[in-house]
Length: 304
Image (cartoon, rainbow, N blue to C red; front, side, top):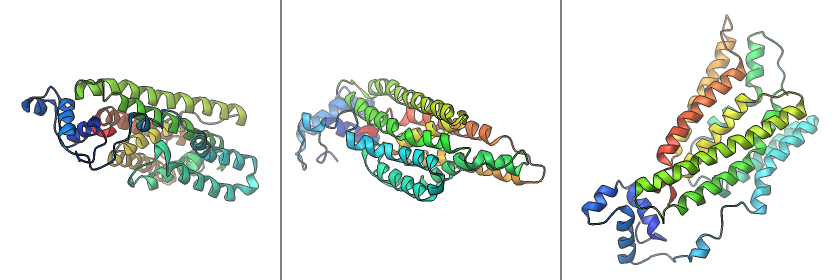
């Protein structure tokens, strides 16, 4: 791990991942883990080419034009589907392919499979048809297949700001490695940046949902907003090496929404409104994952 690191900060992150803390470093006569990492970096020969500082930072905190276009394509496909109902099926395939391509690269890419795809599809399905299905199963109204289209388009369009904020958070967090004087110092610097990324995405998604509601005449707000924040938080965890908690949070939300459909179909129709369920379930799951994020993503090991 040490020989393959490109800089001392990657070694510090690796040491933390192996359980070495500032106390252990002081026992080895270093002020903190970062000081120990600097000595290890100096003493162990490199086995990889070390990039220059300018080369390492060449990506910057902003998305390139090509990456931005790629992340906007799923949302554009959803808008096309809304304008061409007769071509909804082919456009849905286009949206799925565009979403797959966008998540295969860029700042939302997960290095290893996170096991969350099935649960994500389930949450998307409920976002599109769940509230209407609950209404119909509970005999509270007719099933309207197009009622969730506008909100789903807003969710798809929010992929671009999600990618931009994910890139910004990754760059901003890694930039705190050098000036930090210990793991606690690093964590204190990263947490406000994580909060800013989550708040920025929530604001961008809310603006898109309000625009969708204005254009469509009406569209749900709380449920899709909670779903978007849940998916963004889960993706941040997965991108930074914690796919397990992300998948667990999505699976729990998906199971709770499936339970709502079962209750609505049961005799007596004991089920709350589908929109209320989506907002409550996804909001609670997002809060739990955000708490996990403030704990796990504040570690140096998440940014090597």
